[in-house]
Image 1 (spheres, rainbow, N blue to C red):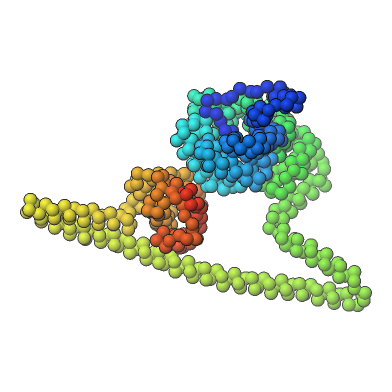
Image 2 (cartoon, rainbow, N blue to C red):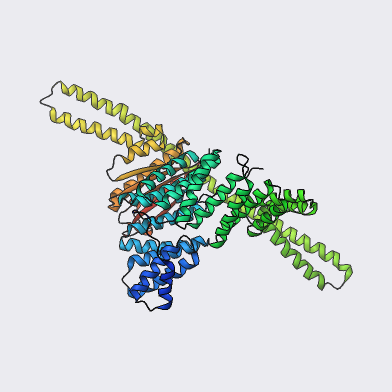
Length: 616
């Protein structure tokens, strides 16, 4: 039984581009706060140092000192950047405790202050943190969007430390896509930059993730080499998340058949559990128990395997994906221990867990019905009417459920039929537009452009006298070719990525970015996404006064996402003029069963995202 637990961690450190700062004398700083009466400026400086020190090791102390920094900054009304960093540190504390809603709220406060004060480094840190939350919630495309924003700012400000952090996070997302080769490229780039700039935190993250990739590739010697390097650095900089992850990964390596050093495996896993418990990270504690259960099982220590797996199961009974591994350990260890009753019970439990996901709502309604029935039953005095009443109750419930089910089904059918009718009509219009655009483009290019070229040649025989006419014909031919290209670009035949690259290249302030693996899609979808990009860029150029426009295309296995973002004047979507074509774009996207989101604030730019599911 070969189980490998994944520890793909996002790097939340705001890495200093000049290297790791010196470690403060924590005890003496705390002593000053507790025994002396420092001035507000002195207290502010001390608390800020302590918050910075505890950001990777103790969430409670980080919260305590960050809140005090915030209080002093607000009272003095002169530490705008410190208000932002305080909000950010409080967000990290909530994030460490897996309170994502509170973490997101404080990261947003930090970003708002950073935007007002033009604190570019805090902007980067906030976007990286938003990306981490998006990934935790399974929204990888949104996570990439935030990282691209952060990377642009890091490159503009020449912040090597932040570039290292962002490259590592992009590599982590590619690992979530199971694209280890692409991930390895990003981690190697991060490793090189971190090594040249002497950034221990960035180097630790790169070593850790490269080691995990080699573990999955089956190269245990390289995996062990990189993880031990990551472990040494994580201890030196007191980064508890990477220390725990490295300890548990090393434990897994020693636990595999290639090494079979179970004593070392148990030693590293036990230490990993202790570190995780020390800074109260529930996910890493859960992973540690899972690794220990695997070690005990391989070593034939079935009672300890049962205890570790049971502890993990008690901590996370709702997650069937990881839960089946823990329950599997419990079942198999109890078979070897001869506890047939417990093994059988957990086999049934596994089946119940699978069923529970689908039947949870039905189970709740049946339980409620049973309670209601028992209450009625106690009130029935006449025994001869009990069976009849019971029958009528159940028939009434069954009949009511049947009527409700039929009504809901009929309503859903009518609604789907209307939507399908509208969708078919929209698609027919779109297909007609594609055919008409293609025909017009071909006619303009082949017929009219050709005829004008022939006239130009004929006029060339009377060259000097008609030079002005020739120049005008040249302009006409150029305009016709441009019009033909706008109607149906020839580059779209080579793929959506190529077409958008060519289109973006026409504008000096438009940048195009692509993420994922390029695959050809249905012709209609490529046409719709291209038209949306064309319309959105034109809106930004004509209406927003933007100095920079970013066009991003993310292609996954089963979706395509287009984002167009500008730094223009923004607009009120409710008051948007018809000429901006937002309804036209929404109709095009709806024809492919996609969705479109617009985020815009007056004076702060506009971000429009189009996402369409695609068939593999």
